[in-house]
Length: 175
Image (cartoon, rainbow, N blue to C red; front, side):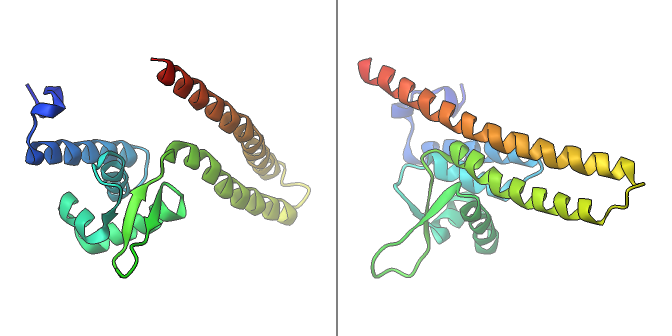
C-alpha cells in the first residue's frame, strides 16, 4: 500500500511531506505534457497541497529540493498568470507565496490577456497583407476570429464556473 492509499491520520509528518512532494511532481508532469515549465507545475502543485497558509521561497525550494533560482523564476511566472499570490509578513523581507483558491478560474480570466495580444498581432498582420494574399488573409482572419469567439465564450464559462461552485458549496453545507 502506498502512502496515498493510507489514512492521512496514520502518516507521519515526513510521510505526509513525501505525499505532498509526489503530488507536486505529478502536477509538474501534467504541466510539462501541456508544454509548460515543469518547475511551474511543481511549485503550483506544492502550494496547492501544502499544510501552511503560505510558505517562503527558501522553504519552498527546500521542500521541492530545487534551486532558489528555479523557484524564483517559477513563482514570477505563476504570479504573472495569477495562479499564485505573494504574501507579505510585516518586518520580514523574505518572499512568501500561496496558491490562489481558484487557480483554474484565474487561468480562464488570464487567458484573455494572451488572446488580446494575439488578436492585436493578427490584426496588425492583416493590415500588411496585399489583396492577392488570400491564403494568408484566411488564416489570419480565422485565427483572430477564433480567439475573439473563445474570449466571448470565456465570459460564459467563468459565469458557469462560479454558478457551479456556488451550487457545489451549497450542497456541501447541506451535508
